[in-house]
Amino acid sequence: MKRIAQFLKVSEDVFASAMEEGFQEYSPGEIQEMYQGIRLPQRATRGSAGYDFYAPFSFRLLPGETIKIPTGVRVKMEEGWVLQIYPRSGLGFKYRLQMDNTVGVIDSDYFYSDNQGHIFIKMTNCTNQEKILEVARGTGFAQGIFLEYGVTVDDEAEGLRNGGFGSTGM
Image (tube, rainbow, N blue to C red; front, side, top):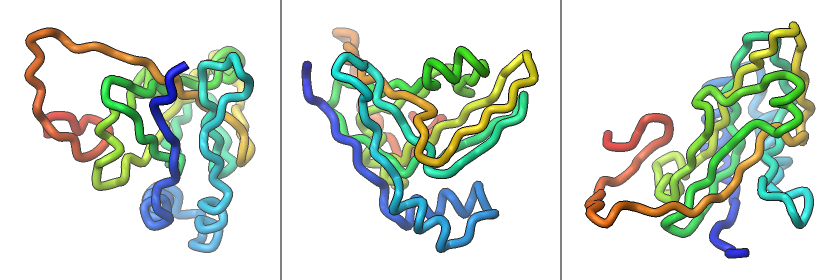
């Protein structure tokens, strides 16, 4: 297997800013504690393709509810690779937990963005059985898989990225 990437934490300031923007119910002390407890993504077994992303805080999603989770994680990877993000298989199967953009795509140049390449995961509980999803802090809720990709022989892309969702070409 090729070793092409490394997960790192974003700075505490970047994580705190994201949490304060989306989750005002947490105090600065609670956010600092969450930051200290962030687990970098890991594979569960030697044969696992996916790196589990762990919830930095507990959350509950009623049917139809959406959440945008600041993971506190960034990834540095070689050019020519992409990290794709999916719900953990069991949560997708049991709750129809779905990514709001179907598949999260983390490009190699996202690492250099102003937000330090902070990975956010936006998901919706799409259950049609009225199931409430509860995820405890520190529990795996999403998984990332690294994939190599190619480009066309006449590709001339020279643009620079600065940001996440929908930032390419801006």
